[in-house]
Structure formats: structure tokens, C-alpha cells
Length: 395
Image 1 (cartoon, helix red, strand yellow):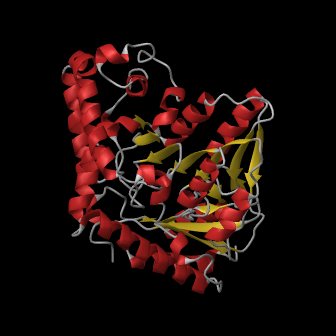
Image 2 (tube, helix red, strand yellow):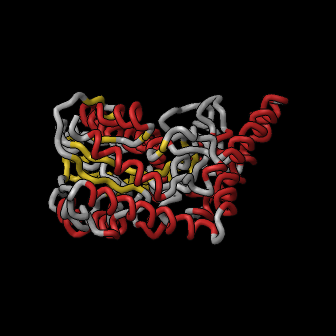
Image 3 (cartoon, one colour):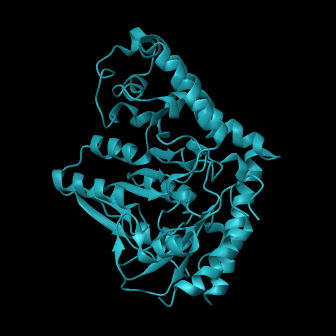
């Protein structure tokens, strides 16, 4: 039986969709609103882009600021967190011998950015490693802290890890690192909508977060929060007309000028963010607090069901689970793809109509099954998955 909220999405009813975490899914009402915005732009593009756009972006930014408990002046819109990480790391000014600290649970695209900049600048990439099954928050803190050296200048820590679906203790870690002189960038690709955020309380220098995932805004909506002391040093990945404008004359923060205009693009994903926040808030009695608890409970129940089916212990404490949860599958040497996971993933879709990622982590022969729990999901979805897994594993 499908979730009673599934009717608000355009998802294919023939597919058991358990991968909201990768690209999100946007409700019908938000998509319709975005289309109205596009129509408005096309009726008079010059009016919109030359006279109206900043006012629209500012209005959307104010709503976002309330949602993530931040000052609007400290927020800029970006298209995705990968773009934000590019912006920050390529603005940093590393020198030979500097160290950039990441973890082995990080998102591969962000690791690619770090490797690229390290090759260009002579910086060194240090990977803090910790496992999956049997770990807790203290293990994570110890692994990261013992990887810090006097040469560490930046640490990139995931708020919610992509391959393993773990909520990490970013506040404790950021406080400790920043006090020691290490700048902290929190990769919050999965944070907004999943977790109740308060930007200044996280103690980091930067936070980047996607809005197309758990906030369910259109694709191309994300944000960067910058602490005031790093704003003058952080430039957008794309330099355009905003660079060099007189912030005082225009009465706008310089970083808003640079990030708000990075060339002609479709801004409707950004402008639809307030609508997405409002639509989901009204979709469920009790609003966002109830949504977060409902999805988290569903993820925990799904992880328990799958662990039982696979005869494995609960991998991590409940406190480290949000709307994603992973379980370990038996190892396999079957083919993998860096973007689309393993052959198991395709078999589950082709033979059982289930869309769920099977991730080769931490090594090529290892397998993690990562489920998402969104409003359009219901407990029956995970029963279907559990039944299918038993038939797939022998292949």
C-alpha cells in the first residue's frame, strides 16, 4: 500500500522508489509554481533579469534564513553543494605542504575537487578513516582528531555521509578544530530538511547544503552559509558581472552581488525554495518537526528489517541515523560503475521494480545497500525490498 503522501509526487507508481537521497523528488505543487515563475520570466526577460531579480532572490533568501536559523546576509544561493565546495576550496589559497583533511566517508565529487586543488597548489590530502559497522560518534571524533597536524588548514566533514548514510557529530568536531586554528567546511548535502539546522550553532566557517533533496525544491537549489569572517575571502566558482560592482552604491553585500549573478541562468529553482518549504510544512499535520521524526522512524525500521533479513547486527547507534540508512551486503566481484553503483542495483530495478543504490564502499568488492525514507515512502516499500534481496544475493 503506497504512502498516503505519494499522490503529491509525479513518481512512477510502478517503481518502488527508495533513492530519494540521490537527487530528491519535487512535489507536483512546487513544480507547477516553478513553471509559473518561468512563464513570468519569459513574458519580459529584460524586466526580470535587469530590474526584478535581486528582489526575488532576497525574498527567497529571507525565507531560507528562517528555515536554517541564520542571518540572510550570511547566505548565498548556489546550484548544488559540489559547486559550493568548489567555490570555497578554490578560494582558499593553499601553499605547498598545507594539509586538507577529509574522511573516507566523503562524497567522491568533493574528494575530486580536493585532489584537483592539491595537485595545483602542492597541498597534501589527508584521509581520516573510520569504519561502518560497530562505530559510534566518539570513534568518528577520534579518527578525525588524530589525523590533524600542525599543517592542517582545512577540514571537510560531511553532516550526513553519502555512501554510508551516517549523521556525524559535526558540531563537536567543528568546535574542536576551529579552536585549534583549522577551518571547517561542513558538507551538508543531506542536512537541510533532514535535520533541524541552526547555522551559527554548528561552529564551522562554512556550510553548504542542497535543497533539492530533503527540502524537495527543484533541481538546482542549494545554499552556502559563510561565517562573517570568511565572507571577504570566498568567491563564487564562476566570476561574472557581480565581480567589481560597488556594494556600497548598490546597498548590497558584495558576496551577494557576486554569487547572485554568475551569468544568465534559470533562477526559478532558487525562487521556488520558499514554496517547497511551505508545501511540505502544510502537507503533514505538525509540519517539519513531524516530517523529520516520521522519516527517521521509517528509516530506522527499514534498517532493522533489512538487518534481520541479512542476519546482521544493527550497524550503528540510532543517534547516527537520519532519513538515510545503510546495511552491509555480502562482498562481490561483479562489475561496478563509479556513478551508478553495482550490477545488483540494476537487477533490483529490472527484475523487481526497485530503485535503490547498492554502493561499492569502502572498496570495489564491498557492498552497502542504502535506503532513503521520504514522505512518499511507506513501510511496505521496505518489505518489498527485503523480499527481493533474498532472491538477488545468490546471483
